[in-house]
Length: 277
Ligand code: C2E
Ligand code: CA
Ligand code: CA
Ligand code: CA
Image 1 (cartoon, protein in one colour):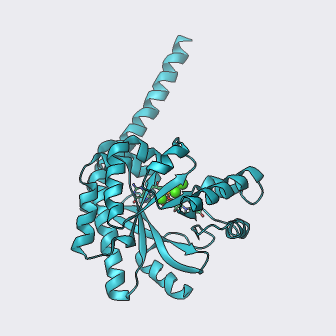
Image 2 (cartoon, rainbow, N blue to C red; image 1 turned 30 degrees about the vertical axis):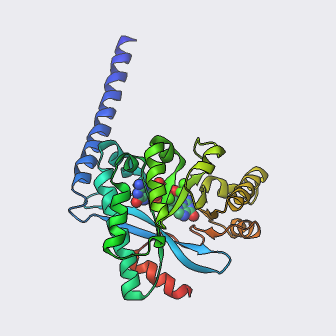
Image 3 (cartoon, rainbow, N blue to C red; image 1 turned 135 degrees about the vertical axis):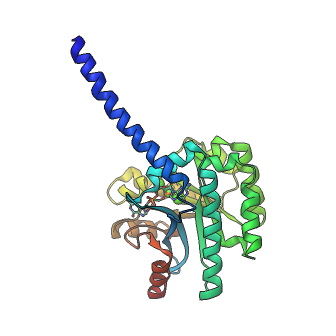
């Protein structure tokens, strides 16, 4: 039994060691990812259901690792958050997304609204709102072209700082969307106090709406709730015609998902937009 225990420990420890080495390696290369131009924003269109047009898009970060290929944000954003690297990366996202909005305006004569994802940690950083205001001013962009997607959990983590900064941004016209709505811990009371313009229904609810009556009821309720609070509703992760039909029928404002379009590099996104019109 003693031997087994020791072998078990050794096995476990070697495994841990590998994982730690892998993580350390990722962390090291993430430190240089910005200066080596390995990060990029991809764009997933949102379809406006009432007009059948694309006026907005969500920017999703991609990391092109020279050895490992494309690394998903689900794998590196947590590392960026743990190490504090999310601050320079978050600043880069703001800079690159606003640069892109500006480029589409100047070169294509298109006012495309871009939503960026904001991490909880960025709210702990006092300059977030200043950073955003400065980026918008230096490019002379209408603030309404920028949306911030924040999760309930992010809002709760630094509640006072988050509400204060979002309020300041919203005062100048920046849009605020509550991401992954329904999956966090926040109670409905907070909806009244948080400065929010858009609810994004989480993919987990959308997945089952066509067959599962509970998910259908939840989604219908979220849409009604949002509209009665003067908010608009976006459904994410729409993959089937049946889901789209359900959302249309129940008054959802915008949809996003593989059924319509996957996230695309900026150039391909523009191409997609041209063909859709
Ligand atoms: P999220 O904000 O909920 O983004 C939606 C995710 O769902 C994206 O994954 C998107 O590619 C994926 N998706 C879109 N349509 C469909 C669909 O029809 N079916 C399925 N199964 N998935 C769909 P992605 O790009 O891998 O991003 C994962 C998460 O990483 C995001 O979830 C967000 O939390 C985070 N993230 C992505 N980009 C950024 C960023 O720039 N900053 C920060 N802080 N977080 C980011
Ligand atoms: Ca999002
Ligand atoms: Ca989401
Ligand atoms: Ca989600």
